[in-house]
Amino acid sequence: MRSKWNVIAILCVGMVLPAQMAIAQEVAAYLGLGIAHDGSSGKQVDTFGDGTLYHTPSLGGPFANLGASVFFGKHVGAGAEIAWRPAQGDYAGIKYRPSFYSFDAIYRFRLGQRKRVEPELRAGIGGARVRYFFDDQPFCDAFPGCPDSTHFQTHLAAATRIFLTDHFFLRPAVDVHYVNHFSEFGSNWAPRYSFGIGYSLGRE
Image (cartoon, rainbow, N blue to C red; front, side, top):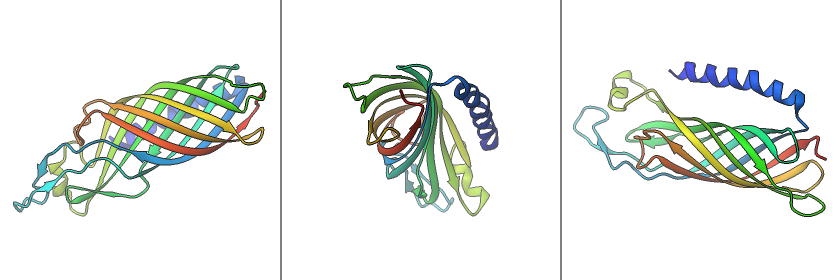
């Protein structure tokens, strides 16, 4: 299942972005760091089959994110983003790492005559993935979807690009992931807050 979703994501990016960039007026990329949150599901799991119950955790910790966007005019564009937890966390006795990816439509505004501040709104679809790491295969049976649980998600975001020069910008952002059947955690909603730096080519 993991390889299937990876291949689909790579093919989508590989086919769509080159075509978009060929007709784009502006292309940008950014890298950021932030935090994400969702509550615990409240479940207790006998992970190792020895009668010891382990609590499921809340979603949290630092998340890195990497994204790219293309604009076909002053206001309308498209983008793709992936956010992941760089360090493994503990999930009821075994290690795990969550991630999110999305493909978005973008609408931006330009404020002021110098156009140094550009708020943007994003909406799209993608997936959320929880990957488990373990030493012995039988322990995986305690977790639905293990070793790689993937869910469909819808994605909404508000961000602002603050240009320091004609090309370099800062990017504070608030993202909201609505993950279908996100049973590993307490709800289907996972907000994420990040701050990044990026580079843009082709700005007017």
